Length: 159
Image (cartoon, rainbow, N blue to C red; front, side):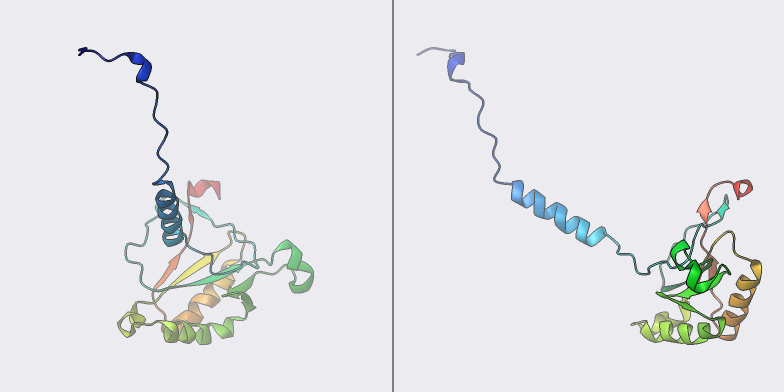
């Protein structure tokens, strides 16, 4: 009996691919769980202003988004160049904000979270401040007092 084996029999074994389908399905499920689908189709130009002192929301209570800005290039002929308001997937007037807030409150499944509804304003940096003031006034009348502004991170001097 020899003490050492000959190297002739040491061919590389074939790669075992039995676990490959498991890995593929695990990655598939991971991306299905982690991916967030876009909820709203933007009808406006939405270039957010930059700010350097930005805080991320820690608790993700229910958030409703209100967009404001000029209509997109393909919609300018129909809606003009004035800054407009977008609620969900359609243009809206300022007077429709209260109904929108009430609808968003009704859609919250857990009743204890209704008071924590946060309205996030995504306002184009070219939009006039007048539309923001009108939105805030209407939100105040709808008793939606938790408001935040969505901005991009960067130097405020670059705006």
